[in-house]
Image 1 (cartoon, helix red, strand yellow):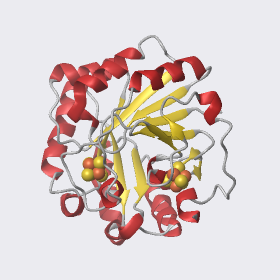
Image 2 (cartoon, protein in one colour):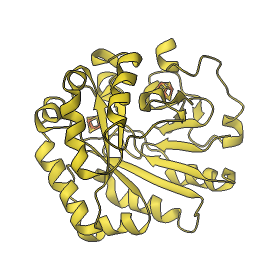
Image 3 (cartoon, helix red, strand yellow):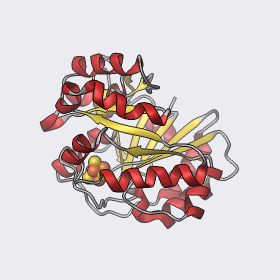
Image 4 (cartoon, rainbow, N blue to C red):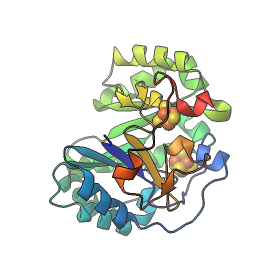
Length: 268
Ligand code: SF4
Ligand code: SF4
């Protein structure tokens, strides 16, 4: 049963983060994709709760009007929840932040931790991102959630990273850095154990080992980008499963066998 997908609504970003695997693999293309037809397929398929993440190969707020129209297209489908993740560098108006709030969209800000750590990998975007975190809080009355990538430097400064998030009091979704600068699954799991003693940390179920859970690729996770569908965002350099118009009933028939305690991408 598929219960979550990610949709990359664009393929462009105003940052060039050091560890960005989309840039690393040279796969930020610019291919049109009919997002409404994917949403139509979700509406037809989803009987129970279903989660859509507007996240992917770029910064979705750069195409704000499109993102807004996709969110509006889901009005009335209370079983479908939406989240998005921003790098925090695009200024939205007060009205736009409130639009997200009123549509119950969970907004995650990608901040890796304290300034030096964040700026080292994320193009010195810390000040701008934190300014928008405060703006989000001013408008909505609460802090957003955070998404933080954990690499070697985060491991070496684990207490400092965890302490950074404490004052916000909201949930942090850590994700393991993979690829050229990656850390091992074991190191990452140890970091998560430490973090969860002090702050609210997302613990994955059957979704992705990057969040501390099991790998759900090819079961309940799919990633739509470049007019195609892939097992997940990290599998985008593997052959696609089909076109982005593929009905979910067809996707369900495609399964892969491996130990779900490990990342499928890294078993290849
Ligand atoms: S903000 Fe995200 S998509 Fe953009 S370069 Fe950084 S990691 Fe990649
Ligand atoms: S293949 Fe790896 S990155 Fe993709 S969902 Fe599974 S664990 Fe996560």
